[in-house]
Image 1 (tube, rainbow, N blue to C red):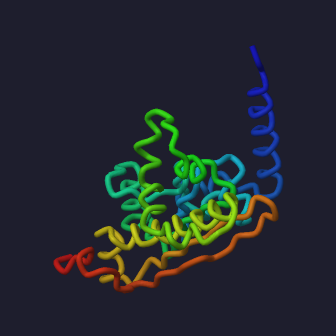
Image 2 (image 1 turned 30 degrees about the vertical axis):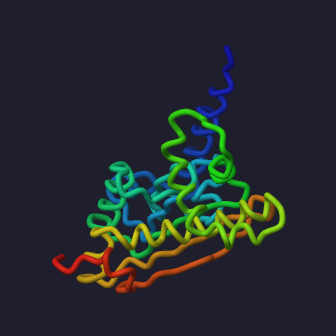
Length: 211
């Protein structure tokens, strides 16, 4: 039986010891309150850790991750995180961060059935269908996939704007700002691809007038 997990426990003890050396009140402070300005909706890919690539510390960024960083209007997990972040934590910014080389994106571009995940990937297939003419202008598969990564992020930002949670906060508190980013695995750089400020109008059919 592999015992590599023990390295994680050892590293945890080392990290905790070092944190106390640097800041003796670190854990006492964190245990009583969290006041992050950011909600991060990212991909589950282990190569894209929100805190590492943004240089943030514990308590600075509230994180939700799923395959291909989707905002699905029937995902109670995501919606619960979103509601808590917006209405309780009062975050000022929501970031949807995808990444080039995303396996979920590539899988959604194929015609193979992969099991239960097919139902999740269908959300990405819908993005592909909507933007097919733009994606198919790219000459090779990698470029097509990278284009879909960017367009998927844009669609998830729109999906956030469609929620009554975000629209209510926009109406009464003029927050949060929505940001669509894509992270490059090959260079570690984040590329902003879109942004929506409070009160941005989307298709009227998605706007609630009785909030």
